[in-house]
Image (cartoon, rainbow, N blue to C red; front, side, top):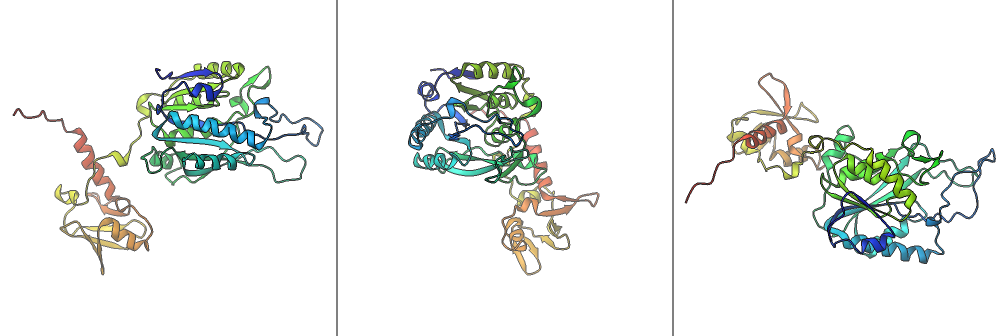
Length: 367
């Protein structure tokens, strides 16, 4: 079967997933029913009724029934996921612990749990419990130890050059973003695009295939289109299908050149000694420790650094100075340029990479 890219497939997700090719998708994002177990209507202090989640698709007869459903759709997703693929699933305290246990029982390996902290949660009107102000996302890989996609630098850049943490403070989908039909919510649990933006940008690349087995109002497809990813949605409610189709059709894809992200891991390895060999540094040059520029080190002819009684590579010496904390030596040392401005030695390494990439490829010699 040809993979139905950028398509919404109508029907039950377990049945539809069985028709897709094995090991064919790069990423799964799943927003399954939460099994909220709501028994009665909920009212505000002014006696107005809360528009809560009371849809039939969120109702299950028992925990055992919900667990069986969860095991079935997770197993079906596992079959179509590539060996190096990952899966996101979101939930609340009502279901996420059960989902997590089943994930592990199916041999998924959990990489992170992310807490989505809501800027504007719904209050607890009855005042009998804490306000539910967060939901939890589990991020897991299909095969433990496989090389999966994680765009660390993109997440860091998105967070003002600070490593992104596992607590994401983001608002609910409200205002213009909230899709409506005749003034009513088109979908009771529509997720904000900002949440999907982080998930997809962090764990997929342009051209990857993202599967959403509970497509709903199409947030996953909308963000996938914006980010140059392909999507496959599965949705059994025809009203939601129509809403999602209209939403995605109105989106303009981002220019391809704006979606290409630098990947330091795939860049050619440049040893520190290469800077000496290319005369970008010379034996005897002074380097300054970025965290405390009063601490200096002298470059030795073999590429080692000497600082007082300490000697080591750019990495080991920086680690010693940081009292054993993990540190990237390329971002730990500064050197003065021709204008006597202090720059990271990473800048010199990048200069070599730029020169290498600009060289014309040589034709192979004839034997």
